[in-house]
Image 1 (cartoon, one colour):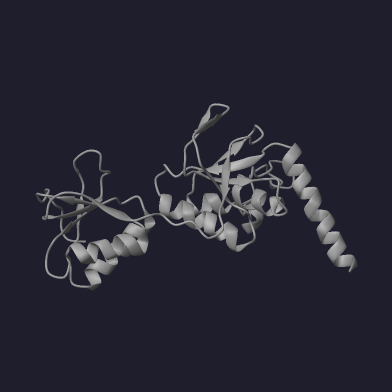
Image 2: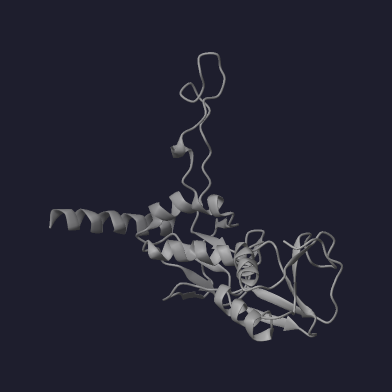
Length: 231
């Protein structure tokens, strides 16, 4: 009973600090280089008991703009300390304990940082102002909605910036399909974009299934681009 009482007291103090001390929250924008990994990061937080919200409308905070659909981690919650550990950057100290006798820096051990957002390459920014915007509390892990856009039947283009793109590419290759890299793709595609021609088992249904499974955005095109050697 004493243990439970102490844990409840610690949790209430974390909620109070999150409501009265900046940062009041952290925003995970969905417009970033790999939205799929961003939602996986948020899902990992939820698995550890962290409350995650979604912005239902556009609002500004300081010099930053929060768009509808962006994920927000409020700090007025019992898991505030865990959130700070996993999302806030750590500045490694520079003092007599972190330098050798000759003044050279000592290489840190793994306690240098536990910032999971950095480890996963997820962009996030803190909220220095109190949150007044309307938010939606998530009741299940978020997931990107995969889709296939564009017209044409020659094949599909796929971004190389999403980690799950490589999983989809490996699936295509495993099933006997072909995949190419584009060193100089048409705008707005990034160098290294994947070109997947419509051949054999790689058809519209197969690509739609990959888009749904991995939450990826594929784009259909009418003509094959200039390609590099097969991956």
